[in-house]
Image 1 (cartoon, one colour):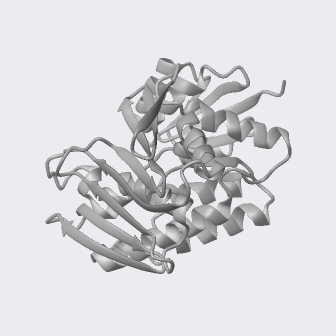
Image 2: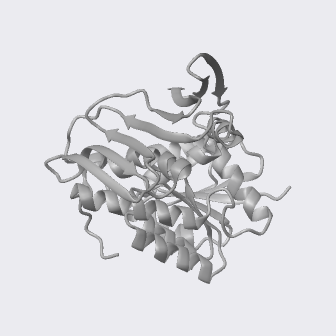
Image 3: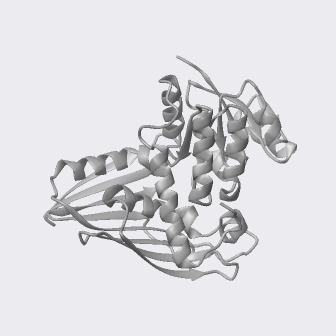
Length: 328
């Protein structure tokens, strides 16, 4: 069994969740943690058992022992930090959202392909058992054709211009933070819409506080999507078909349920409970499996899908009137 040396770039909240799961994988060697602060990097490394701590992203990227870098900085820095690691010959796993714009995503993909290096977005949903089960039911034809869907991800976070969530310069706003999940579900189930309608409430900072999105398809299918920091929701996706529906729901931080309702009468409910904190170990294991096979991108989440997802997010952002300070 090949062992891979992992580094984490950025030592915030999501990095802690990822490190907690990563340390459970026997193939993963916790090699290095990097932060802009050496003290923060050392505290993170000591907490999770990384062998090295760097107070410089450049020094970590130049470490010849590092095989894979997980990028956990704010959205606004994914492009810069991914290119840094690619220049140093590292395989890269980038936390979602992959970048701020499709233009940035294309540059990241081109850089990785030019050096024949692995690159992937850390979009954990696509590897979860609940997602796989729901897709299997849809593809089986049991419920007939899927015609409409609704997906929502909302949680309450009071407005504070100083936080990442409400800071457009850091890629803040509900779209890239949580709206990306409903957009993913619509893109995966129905494809790319012919028309997008958006109602947006912008915070005083200019970040999108709430979004209501409607994807309309040429054959009449409709997806209704919502993201918000103003309210709480069940965090669920419902796919409505000719002979019933499927509901995928986050029941608690460790569990997801899939409900299959046939003709509105019988219900089959399956619960998937993760043994680890968030199931992020699945994406880390997937990266190592891909590298062991000599792959430079994931067959489950190819880079073409990620770029297309970013293009959809760009369209939504333009309609909503949300602007980031970027050139690409």
